[in-house]
Length: 299
View 1 (tube, rainbow, N blue to C red):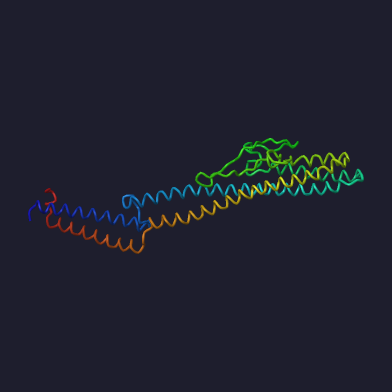
View 2 (view 1 turned 90 degrees about the horizontal axis):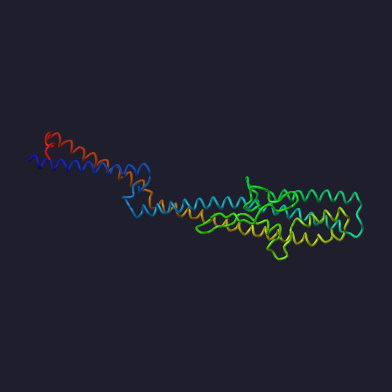
């Protein structure tokens, strides 16, 4: 055999070794990672689809965390309005008890005033409830209390929105201007006013003023119920979003797995085959070199 022919055979053998080694390397990566797709070149379209699904899944996970945060914030806000309704209900009972025709005794008035003032202070504390370092009902001014000790509103009507889906945002705070002060509502009322009037009426033994708070407490209770309903509606929307994101995670993970995951039995079978092919190619090259030790220099 001529040196030129032998050199060509050697080149071919070297190429076979290189090809076999690359195939075994790819199969080894599949075996180690459990993934069918380890390089974009193996299936460009499949790789792009999987990458797109992963991007969507990453965004979905962030939006789900947003929804979970919103659920916690709104859950605490619902507790706030529940406590306010309970306080309003007790104040209404005290107003009924104090609105009789007969003048109350000094001792009785002082006892009632003490309780209603305690309730009023608890209402102010509830209105300034914080989640972390943010006041729930202060709008964009959430770094400070929503109401001062005199019952003046210190916040604003700003909405705090979170993204729970592509192009879908939900406010996770309730405006105290609307829910507490009654602004923008038909028959809206400042929820704090009946408490203040009841304290004044009992202190001055003004039966007419005391009696006038009864209707106001009813209006306040209805107004707080509307706020709780709004909170509940938003929480339901967040729950649906979280369900959608959980389902999307299942579906996307399954789709990515169908594209990327390798068949373990097939991979290890291919690995054994590729290893055998590589050993055969190396053995052939070694035999050629032994039989023609100098021919490798002639190209």
